[in-house]
Length: 365
Image 1: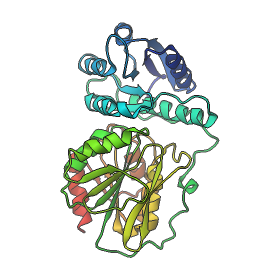
Image 2: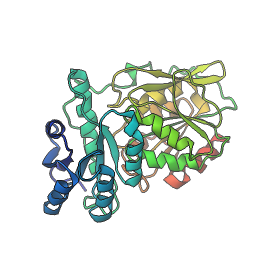
Image 3: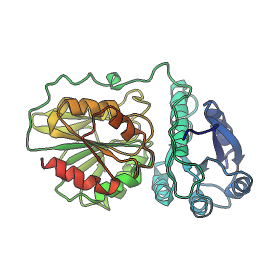
Image 4: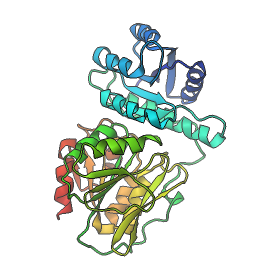
């Protein structure tokens, strides 16, 4: 069913400047309404008693009660989609991963002021994250998960993967024994990816992942997964080889492309504009895989809002790759998989708990 009215947001942050800036950014989107601000969790709790918001943006470090403790209280007492809002501090990235484990829907960086291009990108990312949270499945939350459009102040046109590399030319390497798996995910993807990767054995095909996540946090995310999984997991660096048993995660705020040198696959990590509203972009990774790997590749698209990856998955399918999408029932937000399915380019649709087995099965075809 469609949402009636705007997404109502409560901003919780101890900085008056941040509260004012976030409120201005969010209310620049016609689909969002800021219903209140709070300087700490105790003020926020009083506001929630009066009116339960659709989404809460929550700072991590605040007086009287830290954001993680307040998040756990929200999830146990009044489940509401929560987006954690953080400064660009690498040391705090582990705390934010704990927030995602505790039930936060997403993590955003506090807006970067000063440079016009950065402010525009901050507006896109922050508003998209809040709208995705509003449509996310949160156990016990009042509002049902529903799709939202992306109406927002943004650059004149939404860039495609053309901004980073040309379309596939049909000259990808012929079929070989080595398979490369490319995975794209967004909202809800951090925990979903953990479940998939924990289900893979140490000799799994090489994997490259784009998970929409801020810079500085992908390194901690990869380190956490490396300690949990049989496969080796690391944040991708330019020139890293794609190897059996290795998972490379695209660094936040950089595009990651699959390249080929002879029979060897490796990744290129590059700067560039937002593509499909994201950097890194799933469309960029998938297109590069269509060009470099062709029928040697497997594409997997998972939970997330919007359509990043749908066009690239279609290009991979046309190049001979096998394609898999997460199903609606297990997706926190059924946006990206839904768009790929609508294009008719998905070979298999599987629940989250079956994705690892499906990847292994398809890789042995």
